[in-house]
Length: 279
Image (cartoon, rainbow, N blue to C red; front, side, top):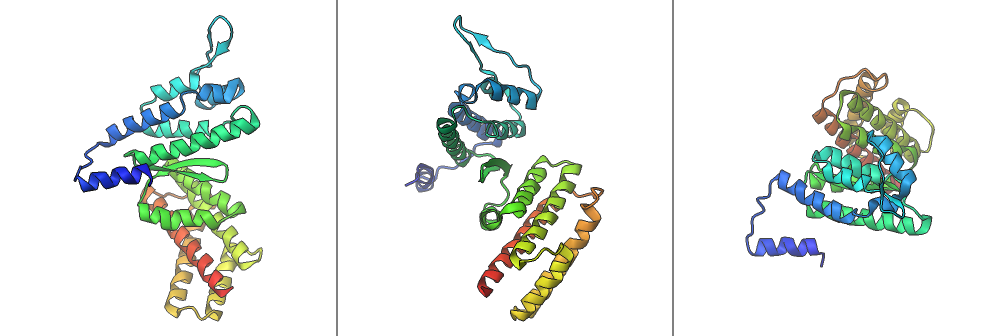
């Protein structure tokens, strides 16, 4: 049995209430990550330490023990960071670096990622980590059921440009600036467009494929009300995309951006499943 599940079952059995604050949760999470990545400077080597310092705009200093130079820059920077979002950003940067020794380094990286994923599971923090192909992204936790059944499911069947754009939409949502939210919605549009091209096996643009999908659903004798609802939602999204994302001059707040991610993901999931049924 997974140790986390065993601990949760014990707590339920003995009615132990978890009254840990988010601040305490982050502190424990930070300790877990520091334990996992305590040797990170030696894992990545000087070239990648330079990349890390360049990315964060920090000074690159090395220690000398009388025999050789060594670095604690990455682990010390992690240790000194008390802003949770900036801490998450550093984790993403670290796992974007190359680990030394191609074969051994790849194994070390995979092990480290698995351990950090466990640190997320054990910690009371409002965030989750996703590994998509060779990339690590950290996202606001959202609703667990929705994340698992909608977002994760979409990530599992998308590929190519559709997947890349959906991941970029999540990353821009994570940044949560006015510009990044507009970029996020533009990536959603492009992801949806690419998925429809893949599912409908053509090279048409989104607007024409909305019509094509509606025609196909009608031929499949899909419930008429559902078909009309899907068509209306897609047309509304297309109008929103045109007004708020294509020219990067839109204005969207964080809840609207989140809603659109779930809305697009639900549509993608529906289209993928309904066309599989047809096949």
